[in-house]
Amino acid sequence: MRIVSGVVLAVAIAGSIGESADWPQWRGPGRNGISSETGLLARWPADGPRHVRSVVGIGAGYASVVVADGRIFTIGKDKAIVYARAYAEKDGALLWKTRIGQTGRKALSTPTVDGDRVYALDPDGNLFCLKVADGKVVWTRSFSAEFGGQLQNGRGFAESPLIDGKYVIGTPGSAEHTMVKLVKASGETVWSCPVKAFGPRGRAGAGFSSPVAVTVGSVPIYVQFIGRGVIGVRAADGKFQWGYNKIAIPQANIPTPVIFGSHVFASNGYNCGSALLKLSGDGQGGVLVKEQYHLRGREFQNHHGGFVFVDGHIFGGHGSNNGLPTCIEIETGEVLWKRRGPGAGSAAIIYADGNLYMRYSNGVIALIEASVEGYRLKGSFRLPGAGNDSWSHPALANGHLYLRENDALHIYDVRAGR
Image 1 (tube, rainbow, N blue to C red):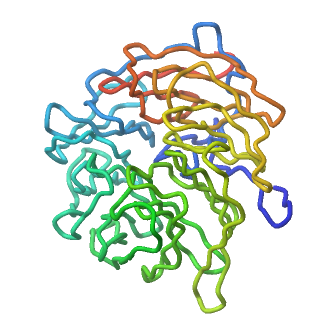
Image 2: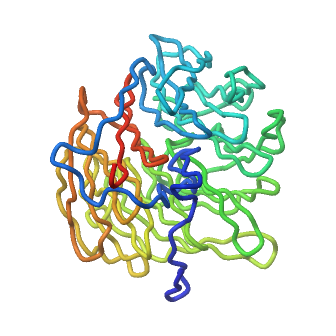
């Protein structure tokens, strides 16, 4: 770890091959798109890494997958019925499926695994706590019926539940119950947080982002990107702390912010651009926010696909409905390089072992070196059956790359020397 001008520059460590290298929640162990696995292929063969298997029949949808304790979890639709499903990591066999909803909307939310429980949110805002072993329902809550759930965009609830110690955090999105904190064992409400308008941009309701946790000084807060913009909510009591409105847009606020030290990097498409925010204590048990800089849309905007923070730099795809691989120096906001990659459309990104894994909307998968010196493509291939809305984010667990393409899950071995 090194520190430059007060900005902590580090990569989150979350396990390694030989111990446990699971991917138990949205964007991985640290909820930041980072895997600490090593011993992975530094370059791919011409036709891509070795295909292990494809699991067909996981249900339609854009949800990603999570992997924990030998099981793979996701949600998907069979016609109008939404199911949470679990598969065996070793051979892809279906272990169980549990109905969690019926809707005309797409299945969007990635489940979260915590111990012997899995938390799954259907597109209409029904939150289920299920048993990992057999999928039996432990409890359920309705964001819509119980908390007046409101969406910025009618496509459906897309966030992935955040587990924080004994609690689960979600975003119903209504003015009086914008975020809620529940006891993860029982579903009992601890608090709900009202958020009023804090700027002229955006629209009321839950966005597509997922909450992340950070402690500022001694004050834990949750950061979320809602329809009005990026917000901070105090974890202890749900008190609204701050809002940042500049990168909000009425249509859809999508990327999950990245946290490092006491900083938040957030971005959005539709020419909104990006911002580095500095968090600090107010001396009275609260947290304040200050904009360090704002990048205009033409400099860096991330529509969907997200971005990662690696050793003092942000890597991600630039552009609305585009994913130009880009490297930004976090301290200054300087764009060090930006190139057109091998795929088309937005690009979802994760990082592992010195490389970026970028999954484009047209189904092209690219391995790109996470170098500050320039764009270096290390291999690419295309998923079978891909269209122009390959939006599910990749997952990396135990040396295997998981890529969902609607009703099918494709698994590739990315370990070196195999």
